[in-house]
Length: 108
Image 1 (cartoon, rainbow, N blue to C red):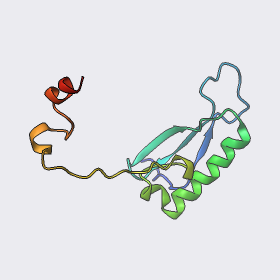
Image 2 (spheres, rainbow, N blue to C red):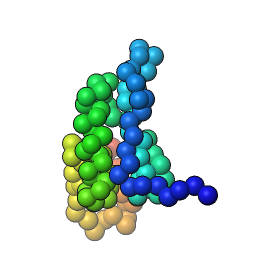
Image 3 (tube, rainbow, N blue to C red):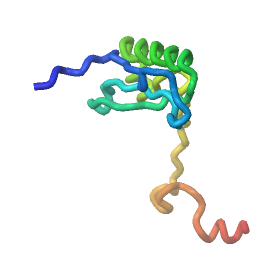
């Protein structure tokens, strides 16, 4: 039976300097408590020092619970600001709450 995954165990892949053939750069591998499985997230950098910094930040966010509250953001710069749209009374009529085809046609 496999051992239970550890929250906060973040690994950097590949564990060597990048080559030209490594197009995507560095990747973080860790256990996601939201999806409850091991996932890989792209660091978005080819610099090893930046990737290590992102690895430490992701590890801290997993351990102190900020990862869960931010819906899976691996760093503070990846947090998406949620915008709340006011509900209108015509949402049930049009489905998405946007303008109808006729309104768009008239505006055009």
